[in-house]
Length: 138
Length: 255
Figure 1 (cartoon, rainbow over the protein chains, first blue to last red):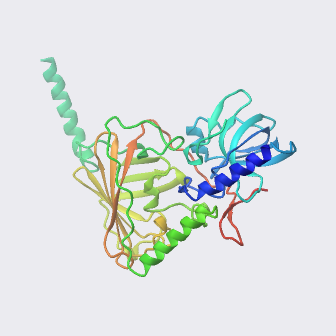
Figure 2: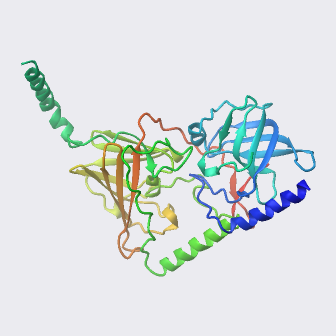
Figure 3: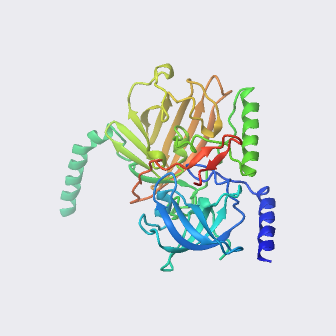
């Protein structure tokens, strides 16, 4: 049931992409390789966090919503200055931290996703800046 | 009596400081020094999020370049193809993807905030993205395009015309293409920077290129002052994007 719903959402997302204009993400590259109209929620443990430009990345191990099996994800964030302006701090994440994220996965099926929103273990929430787009699910 | 003394002191101070100041900028003009963000505001993470005190009309979008044929048809076809590939999730590689800076005039679209510094004889503009810097030498001899070393930021000279800073830029790398528009070594950019009030700065841009353009390509950008903002470092050290060898799109290195 859950699986069918996800597939429907994916199909709707693919249809919607033809209707939206994909703007340039920021200074560096396009976010078009991501399924920007599909958003998933993952709760997992951070295994790596690299605060650098052109983009900040972290990795998490999170159980798959359908199978329950743990999957390793690379999560793409904005540039350091965009994140600073959105309230982040360079040292606010570290390996071992439990986080909940909303993100748009890559269209090609590889385990990477564009962050939309993150909730830290202490409950603080942050966006990924305007270029990445807002979270549309909770 | 007391007021008269103060006025006399101020007059003397102005007389002492006035002529020195006038060499770089008219005394009546507010300084450009400080941080600026593009206007209209771009949303969270890009700028201050603080609208201007006085509402200001947004400049018109950058128009289509008046390219000569067959360049115009080629450019339109390229733009349409790039838009279609992007819609399919296969955005074509770009200079930005390869961590190359915008160069001129692209760096003045202020994707990220920029800092302007006025010092005697020079105006320096620092764009946060890619740590881009351009130096505008005031009242310096004009540079002939054929004598200008090709650079991303070009070679800029400027002069004050009343309260407008007029900047000429030549010597632009042919590989640095704003909006994919091709240009020759004879390309010239003229900017007219003018404060329209204390916090809004207008930049009227004119691009000329006798080889590629039928006439001037003109538009305006608007910047809003951002008091206290400190420009951040941007070194493109961890680029995980590459050109997919088969499909030739911007692809993320996941593992």
